[in-house]
Image (cartoon, one colour):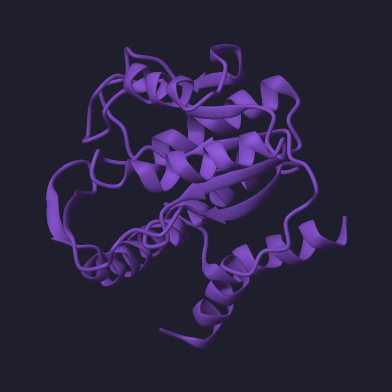
Length: 206
């Protein structure tokens, strides 16, 4: 890990978020990890910090239980259905961090949203946030994104992750996530971390 990436991680997990955001986006997770995201989002909604929750609008693919499964759980915990928004559609046959980011950023631009909380489990949040910022800077540069870690889950549990094909302890997912960030950055799918730090500095000056 280089110094710039270490600086990014400290910034990421120490975000001073604004008093209110337009919406919170919940990155899709497998059934093993979903409660990290759902519990955090429910807490944000109940405190009226995030007035609407946006979830992937896809069906049950890539390990994600599907939009109706997540919407039902959110309603069960007291979030009215009218405050649950879907990004993307059930006709999608491919889903990953990048496709989620593309769908959400397009919706945010069309809806006029300016401040957004991005929620993912701790081990997944760095890649999710870098992906979302990379897409936003290309498609909706005015969007102000704030990272919010999900509720912590036990690190020693073996879980299904990464489109339902990886079985590993959550503690071991950290290294594999960092490897993916390096790989996708080298391929050009993600912006380099120094560009993400520049984005955070510019956002905080607004």
